[in-house]
Figure 1 (cartoon, rainbow, N blue to C red):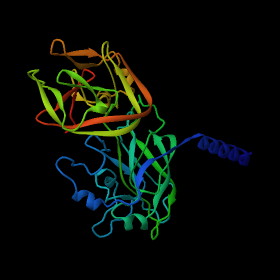
Figure 2: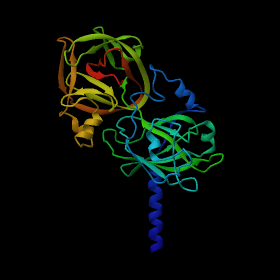
Figure 3: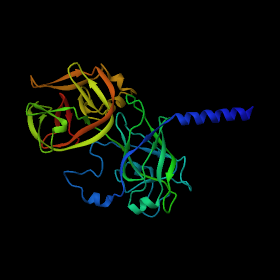
Length: 347
């Protein structure tokens, strides 16, 4: 009887595992020299990877960690130190199958970027093992497998989770690896999520006219609002960046709408400039739907040149292949108007 019960449990477990979706990561590069990338940073483009609106974890827990060697350490914090040349390396003597790291990503509707392997240099990357397949859990519940490419740089993927619900922790468990040329040690250099962006169908206010976001060029002039005096000025856009997303939020008030990530900054009554996810966390809520008809967002009334608040009436998820944009700098200003909503530059 015990053998039959054990066999039944094993079969049920195998069936549940088989039902999990497998997601394929996109992107990555054959070879990338992060030392040269660091040397090429400038005031106009100070981001080593991603953009100023990418968001990283604030803490991490790992199942094991390789002991430090000389000046090199392989601790959990290396997963979110914004330096691809450091890495978390698991501490088992074999290929680390079953080892994992757990992070508090603020995912929302955003995708995830992961830097596979130890990307200190190309030789270090080849000599150490990389992850081929990981199993992902959201708050302890398995949600999918992710297949990674055997490439340097960063790869992106989206999880099949409820994008209206905020999860506290995401666990990434090693299932398969690409063996290293010299070492079994398995490494991950960095993880973050693609943050604040708005859809390409968004209109940006400029010189009292509306310009489609995909037509707005670096160096162009956009309308800014002084938050204290409500003075309207025209200022030069320093940088617009583009990111791909598979999920966005469709947010509506009685007279306006916008499609954006849940990490995009708007001005909310009683909160100021912040994101929907930050408000959700502050209010200790789990689902963005709980903010409907309770939260007011700032709208710029072009006819009266006034800032007004409107209640958010609906928040829904859009799925697709979206080209999105973020504005990373405005000369002598920080605010701009998109689809009537007051937003703020990310730096």
